[in-house]
Length: 184
Image 1: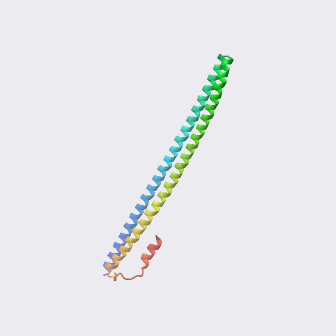
Image 2: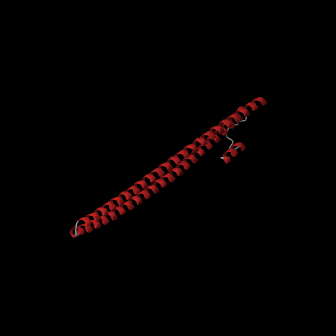
Image 3: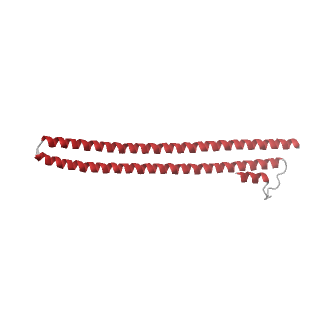
């Protein structure tokens, strides 16, 4: 009889150890996946923001170059022609100034757009991280419930093997099941 009890206790211990090992593996894999997803989202957000800022900077530079070139041409034209062309040059300067102002406004709008997209990307990253955290918590809870269920099943199997199973109508919890449930 003592030998059967020893074998049953040994089997229950092995079952518990395997269950704990599996749970540890599941938790580790879940954490790795959540970390990878968060990192990929951060990287993508950074790339998007960087590309948008670069395009806004390029647009601003190109506008400044165009305005300077137009201003230079207007100055040359005035020197070469006379007073008649001087009036035309003034009109060209005014148009250039208007074009410069419009280009500055467009560059400002582009920068604002880039900032909003960066903010959107950051918010998406934050929400993705929160969702990953929530999903990890759910997986951990399920793993805990699986462990508790396996331990209770192992305990019941041991009790039944030892002839201590009873009629399963006893509503009182034993201390092992209560401790496992409380710990998780």
